[in-house]
Length: 504
Image (cartoon, rainbow, N blue to C red; front, side, top):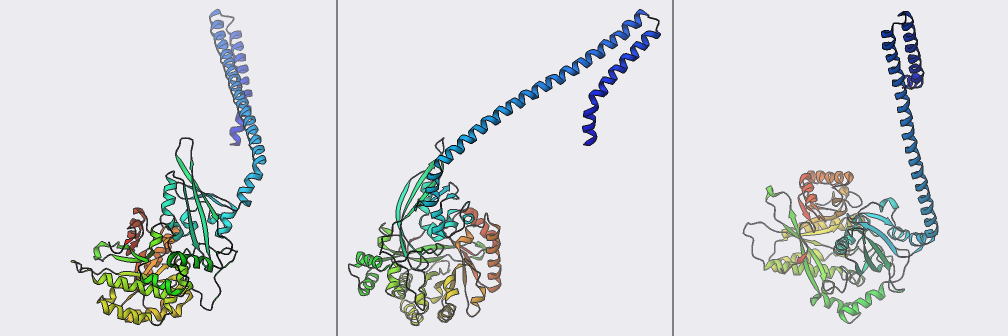
């Protein structure tokens, strides 16, 4: 490189010296040819050609210099223009900075921008503080991972419609891990590009909980379990006010009374409806039967009056969760007793969630045994789901409950497995039949190597333990293909089947 630069520096000097040397040689040759006219003409022609060649080279250099000067001038003009635009933009930002700061830091409305792929491209401080997440855990992350799989699933329909360009507006009640309930007003405002295509939507959330409507759950020796359908991913607000008034108001709306006796009567009188969601086998070669998870829905919820799971705080407040769980078991057993036997001889299994209060109910196993005997349904067709969080918080109750149910011939599944930690050490004292792998892991396996490695490790250990694996919240064919590649036994989610009434 240095030799090349040095040559470029001395090349004009060398060229000039070569021309001078050629001219000297010509003059010397002319002198020794005794001024012969032919030689003089020949050598003079060579001299003229050399002079013309040098003039052409000099002219070309001047042309290149002029061209580069013009380019440099154009670049200078462009730089000046861009500098002007930058200063103009900075001035506009300085003018609008208080407004932007108001939206980003001071406005109480939680704001997030979601693109067409479902990834969060912007969020303000209120949104981040409400979720208690760091910026890197929100920006660029899928909205399902940000909100949590259960809350996302409840709003999945509205999110898809907004990604198609439809504005949405609705209210929902959100239960927090400490038992507090919050009423939220949610808006989706689609964003369009200049060509009219949808580029995403703004998610606006306002906490419209009235003072006195909600209170942090009171601390008790045994903390109540989270209700089915609650989103444990969403953290706790700092505000605190009792939820009794909300619960009582809902009790009056449902039954016209505020005492637990009338609420219990509502359970018995058909205020609920059972739904089921398919759990499909992924390994066709084994000839496994499909199974079903049983879901509880309040009729008012299905008619659009209440969000899913809003009744559970009321049932927990009055200690009715064991009563509700028994109602579910009885009605599933009654329904199963009237179903014709399958022609292929396979037995479908019913997966039923049990609450934390039922885990500590000593009379539930005996009730289950008597109910199954009454309706003549094999106990092997019932699998009871215990949440991973309950396993970690109440391992003693869970172990005793699981052993007693297995003595009656029922199966045991751990749901949301692997959400916080892989709790293999907590199941040493009892047999587990299924691990239902948490949907937040399943959802990320196509783009997150860590989630893919985690689900592969869970399945590998489960195989060694003789436990079947079920992937929760499966939503698309690509995920199903990857789960088959890993060797997962079953899949459940909207990509497999949506919930439907059990009676259908």
